[in-house]
Length: 543
Image 1 (cartoon, rainbow, N blue to C red):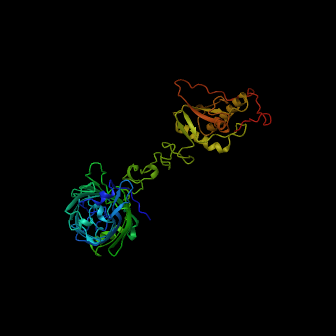
Image 2: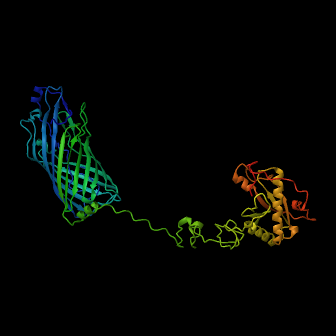
Image 3: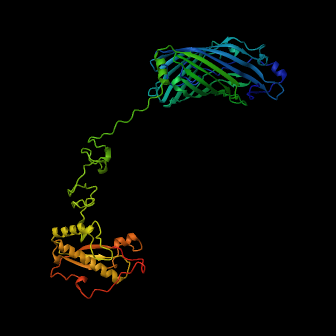
């Protein structure tokens, strides 16, 4: 398979020019610089230091394809892979200090590498295969207030410092030739479900040099990575990261160097203390030292039963659910809590906002359900109201007075109602006189309805007198259908219009005015009316 590669460097070189090229100052082409901390994201550091006096050590193997390739301009010459492939071993160790910091060491060893003849850059033969790289020391210190435990969530931050010593073979592109250093900042956030997002940034102090017309020197490294638990209880997570550096110097007419690569991988935090990580990725094709493809694997071990081992085991445990909120305070124990309890010190039903029910009239119906809270219902009442009660200038009854059909004969079912009306009148002697009003619906003629209403009102008046009401305190009058309460077009409206009302007359300073004439006492002068038969008029009156 032909490796993916974009032109990284266009060299205006002819055959003679290539043959006469002078040696250039070489540099370390290895972009992959891993960390030995088991929870670091391979080449992107996270903020948490190792636990105090806990150690981690192990090997990182990495393989890169075409980490250094020259592409001549014009297409007359094929690309030249100065370093066509590299297999590197990083032997690393790290120790945590006081739960606030850590220090580590990384010894790179190029196990094998190869490439084409280096004569194009002034050296005969290919790159040396087995060489040592630059020894690297690393340190990390958590920032106060942003130190997060392994299993914790929230923000974390730390300061880092990497120092490399010139132990590597510079001619084999495995070293810088002098000491370099790189301070940095780590900022990350871990969610409650274990997902980690981490950002690295900093400055990398490198020697200034020119390689085939490309200016190399100080850089600004960067990294962005994430860890996503897949099977958190088993310690299996997925990793993804972008790692690179921005060149701070460039030669006139050349592109800025920004070597970068995208890596993905899988990790297993085993309960034995060994963390296995493997993955791979590809370079961006936008700089020197940006490989076409790369692969890595590591085995990092921490001794079992150490504080770091315990920290990783806690990380593997699913987060405990938040404890339920404490039960609301209910001092009176009536299950009505907070501002909803209007009487927090005295128990009461929910329906009464936590306050005790009251019964002002003492009829056994609590006030919140009593439609007549100031009048006792008595033995015959309903919904806290008596069958008859005074309301303003009216004696209100709960049920209508019922009569035999087309007659003025009161049905026995209405006797209790009228007896209650008589009781109200006898208990309230200040009622000087009560007018019994008879009303009908709109069916039949005016004369018929007027006569029927008069006779029915008179029957009610006589019942009240027989029940002990003084005769001079009660009158009767019929109004027929002249005073409807509702629409006579519906059955419900007509039922409301067929009624008997009791109106309390205002007291008189002088002699009482006479009552309206009782039609039953006007023998021979009763209007001659006849109820229409159902066949003649379907709108026959109903009781």
